[in-house]
Image (cartoon, rainbow, N blue to C red; front, side, top):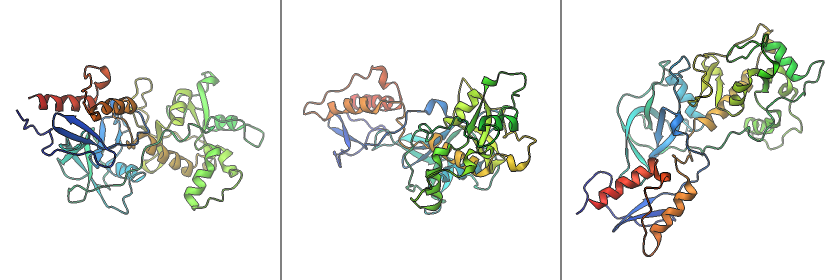
Length: 354
Protein backbone atom coordinates (compact mmCIF):
# COMPACT_ATOMS: atom_id res chain seq x y z
CA UNK A 1 0.00 0.00 0.00
CA UNK A 2 1.46 3.36 -0.96
CA UNK A 3 1.49 6.27 1.43
CA UNK A 4 -0.19 9.55 0.56
CA UNK A 5 1.07 11.63 3.47
CA UNK A 6 2.73 14.97 2.83
CA UNK A 7 6.09 13.83 4.14
CA UNK A 8 6.85 11.23 1.49
CA UNK A 9 8.35 12.36 -1.83
CA UNK A 10 6.21 11.85 -4.89
CA UNK A 11 9.18 11.08 -7.13
CA UNK A 12 12.07 8.67 -6.80
CA UNK A 13 15.29 10.59 -6.26
CA UNK A 14 18.77 9.50 -7.37
CA UNK A 15 22.18 9.87 -5.84
CA UNK A 16 23.46 13.08 -7.47
CA UNK A 17 26.70 14.90 -6.90
CA UNK A 18 27.84 12.82 -3.94
CA UNK A 19 24.70 13.47 -1.88
CA UNK A 20 23.55 10.69 0.40
CA UNK A 21 20.48 8.70 -0.64
CA UNK A 22 18.13 7.11 1.87
CA UNK A 23 16.43 3.96 0.56
CA UNK A 24 12.90 3.25 1.77
CA UNK A 25 11.86 0.23 -0.25
CA UNK A 26 11.81 1.47 -3.83
CA UNK A 27 12.00 5.08 -2.73
CA UNK A 28 15.22 7.04 -2.57
CA UNK A 29 15.36 10.23 -0.57
CA UNK A 30 18.22 12.57 -1.28
CA UNK A 31 20.02 14.10 1.68
CA UNK A 32 22.20 17.07 0.78
CA UNK A 33 25.57 16.88 2.58
CA UNK A 34 26.63 19.86 4.67
CA UNK A 35 29.81 20.96 6.38
CA UNK A 36 29.04 20.97 10.10
CA UNK A 37 31.19 23.24 12.24
CA UNK A 38 29.06 23.77 15.35
CA UNK A 39 27.20 21.64 17.92
CA UNK A 40 23.45 21.80 18.28
CA UNK A 41 22.12 24.77 20.28
CA UNK A 42 18.41 24.36 19.56
CA UNK A 43 17.37 23.73 23.16
CA UNK A 44 18.77 27.08 24.33
CA UNK A 45 16.85 29.13 21.73
CA UNK A 46 13.23 30.17 21.32
CA UNK A 47 13.55 32.26 18.14
CA UNK A 48 14.36 30.48 14.86
CA UNK A 49 14.87 32.17 11.50
CA UNK A 50 14.64 30.07 8.33
CA UNK A 51 16.02 30.50 4.82
CA UNK A 52 17.13 28.09 2.10
CA UNK A 53 14.88 25.41 3.68
CA UNK A 54 16.90 25.37 6.90
CA UNK A 55 17.45 27.30 10.10
CA UNK A 56 20.00 30.04 9.49
CA UNK A 57 19.72 31.92 12.75
CA UNK A 58 18.52 31.47 16.30
CA UNK A 59 18.70 33.05 19.72
CA UNK A 60 16.83 33.30 23.01
CA UNK A 61 14.41 36.06 23.94
CA UNK A 62 14.51 36.41 27.71
CA UNK A 63 11.31 37.32 29.55
CA UNK A 64 13.05 40.29 31.16
CA UNK A 65 14.12 43.62 29.73
CA UNK A 66 16.69 42.52 27.17
CA UNK A 67 14.38 41.79 24.21
CA UNK A 68 15.88 43.10 20.95
CA UNK A 69 13.75 45.14 18.56
CA UNK A 70 12.62 44.23 15.05
CA UNK A 71 15.07 46.80 13.67
CA UNK A 72 17.81 45.26 15.78
CA UNK A 73 17.23 41.80 14.33
CA UNK A 74 17.62 43.12 10.78
CA UNK A 75 20.94 44.64 11.81
CA UNK A 76 22.07 41.44 13.52
CA UNK A 77 21.32 39.31 10.47
CA UNK A 78 23.12 41.78 8.20
CA UNK A 79 26.33 40.83 10.02
CA UNK A 80 26.31 37.43 8.31
CA UNK A 81 23.61 37.65 5.58
CA UNK A 82 24.26 40.35 2.98
CA UNK A 83 21.23 42.61 2.53
CA UNK A 84 22.72 45.05 0.04
CA UNK A 85 23.21 42.51 -2.75
CA UNK A 86 19.85 40.81 -2.07
CA UNK A 87 17.14 42.86 -0.39
CA UNK A 88 15.05 40.64 1.86
CA UNK A 89 12.47 40.92 4.62
CA UNK A 90 11.75 38.89 7.75
CA UNK A 91 8.28 37.35 8.12
CA UNK A 92 6.68 35.31 10.91
CA UNK A 93 6.06 31.82 9.60
CA UNK A 94 5.04 28.24 10.19
CA UNK A 95 7.34 25.42 9.09
CA UNK A 96 6.78 21.91 7.80
CA UNK A 97 9.30 19.20 6.84
CA UNK A 98 10.17 19.50 3.17
CA UNK A 99 8.63 16.80 0.98
CA UNK A 100 11.72 16.09 -1.08
CA UNK A 101 14.86 16.86 0.88
CA UNK A 102 14.98 15.14 4.25
CA UNK A 103 15.83 17.33 7.26
CA UNK A 104 14.97 20.53 5.43
CA UNK A 105 11.93 22.66 6.19
CA UNK A 106 9.51 24.67 4.09
CA UNK A 107 8.44 27.95 5.72
CA UNK A 108 5.00 29.45 5.07
CA UNK A 109 4.45 33.14 5.77
CA UNK A 110 1.91 33.60 8.56
CA UNK A 111 1.86 37.38 9.03
CA UNK A 112 3.14 40.74 7.80
CA UNK A 113 6.86 41.40 7.53
CA UNK A 114 8.79 42.82 10.46
CA UNK A 115 9.62 46.49 9.96
CA UNK A 116 13.32 47.24 9.70
CA UNK A 117 12.85 50.58 11.48
CA UNK A 118 10.50 49.35 14.21
CA UNK A 119 11.47 49.40 17.88
CA UNK A 120 8.79 46.82 18.72
CA UNK A 121 10.30 43.89 20.62
CA UNK A 122 10.83 40.58 18.89
CA UNK A 123 8.76 37.67 20.22
CA UNK A 124 9.64 33.96 20.47
CA UNK A 125 8.63 31.92 17.44
CA UNK A 126 9.53 31.00 13.87
CA UNK A 127 10.52 33.57 11.25
CA UNK A 128 11.73 33.31 7.68
CA UNK A 129 13.77 35.38 5.28
CA UNK A 130 11.81 36.03 2.09
CA UNK A 131 11.64 38.39 -0.84
CA UNK A 132 9.69 41.57 0.06
CA UNK A 133 6.56 40.13 -1.58
CA UNK A 134 6.74 37.04 0.65
CA UNK A 135 8.04 34.66 -2.01
CA UNK A 136 10.93 32.26 -1.51
CA UNK A 137 14.38 33.51 -2.37
CA UNK A 138 17.86 32.03 -1.88
CA UNK A 139 20.20 33.89 0.44
CA UNK A 140 23.92 33.56 0.99
CA UNK A 141 24.64 32.58 4.59
CA UNK A 142 28.07 32.37 6.14
CA UNK A 143 28.98 29.11 7.86
CA UNK A 144 29.08 29.57 11.64
CA UNK A 145 32.46 29.14 13.27
CA UNK A 146 33.26 28.68 16.97
CA UNK A 147 34.10 31.56 19.27
CA UNK A 148 36.74 33.63 17.42
CA UNK A 149 38.49 34.47 20.69
CA UNK A 150 39.00 30.85 21.77
CA UNK A 151 42.68 30.97 20.82
CA UNK A 152 43.27 34.59 21.82
CA UNK A 153 44.51 35.96 25.13
CA UNK A 154 41.52 38.07 26.08
CA UNK A 155 41.90 37.75 29.87
CA UNK A 156 44.07 40.73 30.63
CA UNK A 157 47.79 40.35 31.30
CA UNK A 158 49.62 43.33 32.90
CA UNK A 159 50.32 45.11 29.61
CA UNK A 160 49.48 48.66 30.66
CA UNK A 161 52.49 50.92 30.11
CA UNK A 162 52.24 53.22 33.09
CA UNK A 163 52.09 53.33 36.85
CA UNK A 164 49.21 50.88 37.04
CA UNK A 165 48.60 47.64 35.19
CA UNK A 166 45.74 47.29 32.72
CA UNK A 167 43.89 45.28 35.34
CA UNK A 168 44.32 47.98 37.99
CA UNK A 169 43.35 50.76 35.60
CA UNK A 170 40.10 49.03 34.62
CA UNK A 171 39.23 48.19 38.24
CA UNK A 172 39.90 51.78 39.31
CA UNK A 173 37.74 53.20 36.51
CA UNK A 174 34.75 50.86 36.77
CA UNK A 175 34.60 49.91 40.45
CA UNK A 176 31.87 47.36 39.76
CA UNK A 177 30.70 44.87 37.19
CA UNK A 178 29.55 46.96 34.24
CA UNK A 179 26.83 44.39 33.45
CA UNK A 180 25.31 43.41 36.81
CA UNK A 181 26.37 46.39 38.92
CA UNK A 182 27.99 44.17 41.56
CA UNK A 183 30.44 46.46 43.46
CA UNK A 184 34.09 45.62 44.00
CA UNK A 185 33.98 47.14 47.46
CA UNK A 186 32.85 44.56 49.98
CA UNK A 187 33.55 41.61 47.67
CA UNK A 188 36.60 39.50 46.93
CA UNK A 189 38.91 40.84 44.24
CA UNK A 190 38.92 37.36 42.70
CA UNK A 191 35.19 37.70 42.04
CA UNK A 192 35.99 40.13 39.21
CA UNK A 193 37.91 39.96 35.95
CA UNK A 194 39.18 42.78 33.77
CA UNK A 195 38.88 41.70 30.14
CA UNK A 196 40.02 43.15 26.86
CA UNK A 197 36.93 43.78 24.74
CA UNK A 198 39.01 42.80 21.71
CA UNK A 199 42.21 40.84 22.45
CA UNK A 200 45.28 42.80 21.29
CA UNK A 201 46.37 39.68 19.41
CA UNK A 202 43.18 40.02 17.32
CA UNK A 203 44.15 43.41 15.89
CA UNK A 204 45.48 41.98 12.61
CA UNK A 205 42.06 40.50 11.75
CA UNK A 206 40.23 43.79 12.33
CA UNK A 207 42.92 45.76 10.51
CA UNK A 208 42.60 43.58 7.41
CA UNK A 209 38.80 43.66 7.64
CA UNK A 210 38.76 47.47 7.80
CA UNK A 211 41.43 48.24 5.21
CA UNK A 212 41.49 45.20 2.95
CA UNK A 213 45.27 45.22 3.34
CA UNK A 214 47.30 42.17 4.29
CA UNK A 215 50.20 44.39 5.31
CA UNK A 216 49.44 44.39 9.04
CA UNK A 217 51.41 46.41 11.60
CA UNK A 218 53.68 44.25 13.74
CA UNK A 219 52.26 45.58 16.99
CA UNK A 220 48.69 46.53 17.90
CA UNK A 221 48.00 50.25 18.35
CA UNK A 222 48.41 51.39 21.94
CA UNK A 223 44.62 51.84 22.23
CA UNK A 224 44.28 48.05 22.33
CA UNK A 225 46.14 48.06 25.67
CA UNK A 226 44.26 51.01 27.16
CA UNK A 227 41.20 51.10 29.41
CA UNK A 228 39.15 52.03 26.33
CA UNK A 229 39.51 48.37 25.36
CA UNK A 230 38.69 47.07 28.81
CA UNK A 231 35.70 46.19 30.98
CA UNK A 232 35.40 45.00 34.56
CA UNK A 233 32.94 42.17 35.02
CA UNK A 234 31.99 39.61 37.60
CA UNK A 235 34.08 36.58 36.71
CA UNK A 236 31.14 34.42 35.58
CA UNK A 237 29.90 37.26 33.36
CA UNK A 238 33.42 37.79 32.01
CA UNK A 239 33.60 34.13 31.02
CA UNK A 240 30.39 34.43 28.99
CA UNK A 241 31.62 37.66 27.41
CA UNK A 242 34.90 36.04 26.37
CA UNK A 243 32.98 33.10 24.92
CA UNK A 244 30.73 35.48 22.93
CA UNK A 245 27.63 34.22 24.72
CA UNK A 246 26.78 37.80 25.65
CA UNK A 247 27.47 41.09 23.92
CA UNK A 248 26.83 44.81 24.29
CA UNK A 249 24.81 46.27 21.42
CA UNK A 250 26.18 49.81 21.08
CA UNK A 251 23.64 50.68 18.39
CA UNK A 252 20.69 49.75 20.61
CA UNK A 253 21.43 51.91 23.65
CA UNK A 254 24.31 49.70 24.85
CA UNK A 255 21.82 46.91 25.45
CA UNK A 256 23.11 43.81 27.25
CA UNK A 257 22.26 40.82 25.06
CA UNK A 258 22.47 37.23 26.27
CA UNK A 259 22.05 35.11 23.15
CA UNK A 260 21.21 31.71 24.67
CA UNK A 261 19.20 30.48 27.62
CA UNK A 262 21.36 29.44 30.56
CA UNK A 263 20.42 27.82 33.85
CA UNK A 264 23.75 28.99 35.27
CA UNK A 265 23.75 32.69 34.40
CA UNK A 266 20.58 34.76 33.98
CA UNK A 267 21.21 38.35 32.87
CA UNK A 268 17.64 39.10 31.82
CA UNK A 269 17.38 41.91 34.38
CA UNK A 270 20.55 43.59 33.10
CA UNK A 271 19.35 46.05 30.51
CA UNK A 272 22.24 48.35 29.55
CA UNK A 273 25.97 48.77 30.04
CA UNK A 274 26.65 50.62 33.29
CA UNK A 275 28.89 53.63 32.71
CA UNK A 276 31.14 54.97 35.44
CA UNK A 277 31.69 58.54 36.58
CA UNK A 278 35.08 58.62 34.87
CA UNK A 279 35.81 61.17 32.16
CA UNK A 280 34.27 60.13 28.81
CA UNK A 281 37.77 59.94 27.32
CA UNK A 282 38.29 56.87 29.50
CA UNK A 283 34.99 55.17 28.66
CA UNK A 284 35.01 51.90 26.70
CA UNK A 285 35.41 52.48 22.97
CA UNK A 286 32.28 52.16 20.84
CA UNK A 287 34.49 50.71 18.11
CA UNK A 288 35.73 47.83 20.26
CA UNK A 289 32.28 47.15 21.72
CA UNK A 290 30.69 47.13 18.26
CA UNK A 291 33.30 44.79 16.77
CA UNK A 292 32.96 42.39 19.70
CA UNK A 293 29.18 42.42 19.28
CA UNK A 294 29.40 41.66 15.56
CA UNK A 295 31.70 38.71 16.24
CA UNK A 296 29.40 37.50 19.02
CA UNK A 297 26.38 37.61 16.70
CA UNK A 298 28.28 35.76 13.99
CA UNK A 299 29.28 32.96 16.37
CA UNK A 300 26.21 32.80 18.65
CA UNK A 301 23.23 33.83 16.51
CA UNK A 302 24.17 32.47 13.10
CA UNK A 303 23.08 28.83 12.75
CA UNK A 304 24.83 27.84 9.52
CA UNK A 305 26.55 24.47 9.85
CA UNK A 306 24.93 23.35 13.10
CA UNK A 307 24.15 19.68 13.59
CA UNK A 308 20.53 20.05 14.75
CA UNK A 309 21.02 17.55 17.56
CA UNK A 310 22.86 14.67 15.95
CA UNK A 311 26.44 13.50 15.59
CA UNK A 312 27.13 13.96 11.85
CA UNK A 313 29.96 11.41 11.76
CA UNK A 314 27.85 8.71 13.40
CA UNK A 315 24.81 9.61 11.30
CA UNK A 316 26.79 9.54 8.04
CA UNK A 317 28.14 6.10 8.96
CA UNK A 318 24.58 4.87 9.57
CA UNK A 319 23.51 6.19 6.18
CA UNK A 320 26.17 4.11 4.46
CA UNK A 321 24.16 1.01 5.33
CA UNK A 322 21.44 2.31 3.01
CA UNK A 323 23.93 2.58 0.15
CA UNK A 324 24.98 -1.09 0.25
CA UNK A 325 23.80 -3.56 -2.36
CA UNK A 326 21.56 -5.05 0.34
CA UNK A 327 20.42 -2.04 2.36
CA UNK A 328 20.10 -2.56 6.11
CA UNK A 329 17.80 -0.27 8.05
CA UNK A 330 19.23 1.22 11.25
CA UNK A 331 18.11 0.51 14.78
CA UNK A 332 15.90 3.54 15.31
CA UNK A 333 15.56 2.71 19.01
CA UNK A 334 19.12 3.94 19.53
CA UNK A 335 18.93 7.05 21.71
CA UNK A 336 21.08 8.94 19.21
CA UNK A 337 18.05 9.06 16.92
CA UNK A 338 16.06 10.94 19.59
CA UNK A 339 16.33 14.28 17.83
CA UNK A 340 14.76 16.12 14.91
CA UNK A 341 16.66 13.99 12.39
CA UNK A 342 15.56 10.74 13.99
CA UNK A 343 11.96 11.88 14.25
CA UNK A 344 11.81 12.58 10.52
CA UNK A 345 13.36 9.21 9.65
CA UNK A 346 10.86 7.42 11.90
CA UNK A 347 8.01 9.37 10.31
CA UNK A 348 9.12 8.32 6.82
CA UNK A 349 9.54 4.72 7.93
CA UNK A 350 5.99 4.64 9.29
CA UNK A 351 4.70 6.16 6.05
CA UNK A 352 6.47 3.49 4.02
CA UNK A 353 5.23 0.63 6.20
CA UNK A 354 1.65 1.86 5.83
